[in-house]
Amino acid sequence: MHAVPPLEQDTVDVTVDASPAQAASQKPAHAPGQAANDAPVRDLRRVGIHPDHWYPLAWSHEVKRGKTHGVTFAGDPIVLARTESGKVFALEDRCAHRQVPLHQGVVDGESIRCGYHGWTYDCSGKCIDVPYLGRERLPNGVRSYPCREIEGLIFVFPGDAALAEQRPLPDLASVSDPKYKTRRFGRAVNCHYSFMHENLMDMNHQFLHRKQMGQMRARSLGRRRGEGWVEVDYTFARMAGQQPIGEAIVFGQSRKTGGDNDKDVMTIRTEYPYQTLQIRTSEQTLVMNLWIIYVPLDREQRTNRTFGLLSIRKPGIPGVLNLAWPLLVWFTERIFKEDREIVEAEQRAHDSQGADWNHEVFPVINDLRALLRENGAPDQVVGAGTGDTAVIRFWDSRHGSPLAKS
Image 1: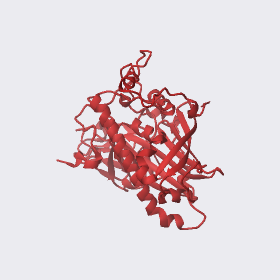
Image 2 (image 1 turned 90 degrees about the vertical axis):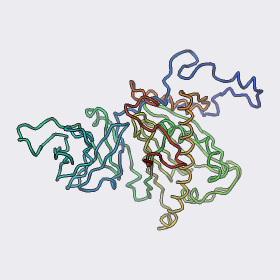
Image 3 (image 1 turned 135 degrees about the horizontal axis):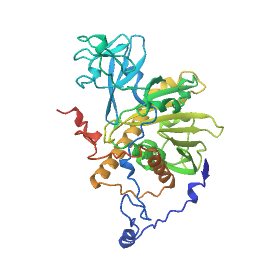
Image 4 (image 1 turned 120 degrees about the horizontal axis):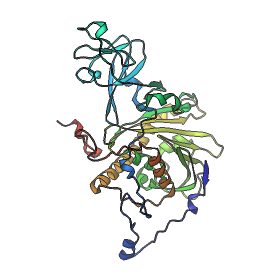
């Protein structure tokens, strides 16, 4: 690990109030996908997520006892099944016989039976019964995936199963800590997962949330990076507007307008492939702990499903947080809606231009992009035209989902 000087010390060559000719001269002289020294650079929006990690593919409540549940990871169909004993397992969602989805079948005790011809598979994917064949003639089974259930999430390891025991599951300690109340949230967002990482880590986008938060000024204290991770610290000051109720619920105190009166430190960390946001007071009390991940759904990795766990420290007065919880949910949903719409707009801009023309000037985001490139799937290219089936690569959530249209 090594520390990097505070971001204010990083120099960014930007001219203010430049003439049109000067502005044009400041555009990068190299094309997308090519560094200034002519070294090839992978388009981050075409870097596939690395499968050799644990990914949540469903909430526990979505997989009922004795039922199946079909999900996808980067276009690969996976069936989750909860047996009569309550155990959850994950298999390739294709019957070895006719390739039809196993999630259309039924759970039979501790196994799953295809709904077409009744071929039956145990939790290891082994075919254990074909009704019209003898036991000595059973065919091959289907792929199984390592599967774990923790804190209301069902995690699957979609990569090399031999590596599953070497890869740690995420630390979700705040979720089970009685000092915290946790909100579980998430939905599909129509963009490459990298846009989501950048959106959360770059707190300079507070202007986007001016209607919800007032005018906030973020000040970066410094950034750090190590093997497989990068993080940055911020403090905030309110320059105009009133403190929203949702923010007051988190901190339990009033934040006045003007000056650097907010001494709490926000630390945002991407530890591939997960992301966290933690807020600590000047007394080092952890008042908010967000864990979040963005799981690609389609093969082109232009749609991801967000899984988030937002833990808020309970105030000293019992029951106060429960009474205020609906306001917190309302507040965070509005923030997430604005973030979702803007990252989907970024994705549309990328796909309409066919390449990444971003001119990024914030050092920590350049560090983050390097991290995501280095840790992504090394030989996989995703994006428009790379899928093996016709898929909708993106859509504007403000106008509803075309997936629901006939």
